[in-house]
Image 1 (cartoon, rainbow, N blue to C red):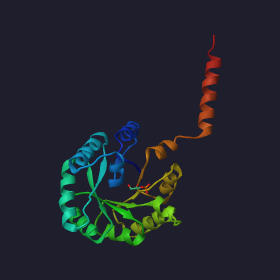
Image 2 (image 1 turned 90 degrees about the horizontal axis):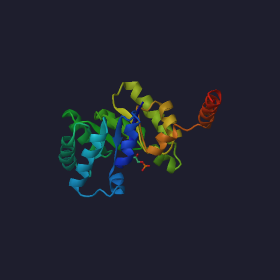
Image 3 (image 1 turned 120 degrees about the vertical axis):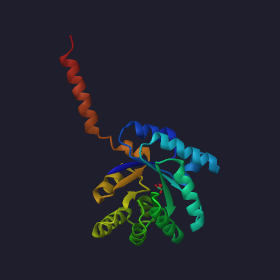
Image 4 (image 1 turned 60 degrees about the vertical axis):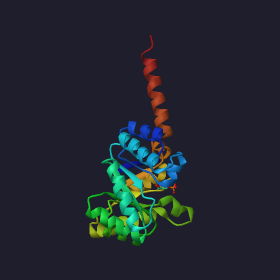
Length: 219
Ligand code: G3P
């Protein structure tokens, strides 16, 4: 399973990259706005900065919602850096745009996916990645993880090559559940990745090892 970090915060991206286990990064317009990055030039420069830190795919989302606009914007984004993956919303023009990008060798991430039917459309268009939003389904009392299971099953039935990139992941438990469900990629906040380290028996065991070592080696 690949680990992506879901943020536009450069310090957090660096911290995750330094762990040596980071495979990519996803952003969206809300995450960019959260960092105070505004205006096309600043946004594009920010994508370049992320690409310099992350040795892997970096999703950059189009703002246009019409076919022509998405194509123009996606081409500009793809030219920024070899790591850029064009993130496109799950709408009719978005699916057409994904097909165009696929045919022209540009990687895509189909975002805002909430149903197995949408996942089929994105795979048919040749999307590189598919982003089902686990947490936002949980928010409305639907089972986000069940969607990952359903898509895994469907994609395996037909050997679709689109990678399932579980998004809107909110906890360390979500990461483990996504792994059990067979997600190819999980994108999550740094806090959820860091949470995976934590176990009280690890802390207790390490303290004991160090105490025993110190006792045996005291002069
Ligand atoms: O990148 C999209 C996604 O991960 C959003 O997560 O927590 O805003 O639902 P969230």
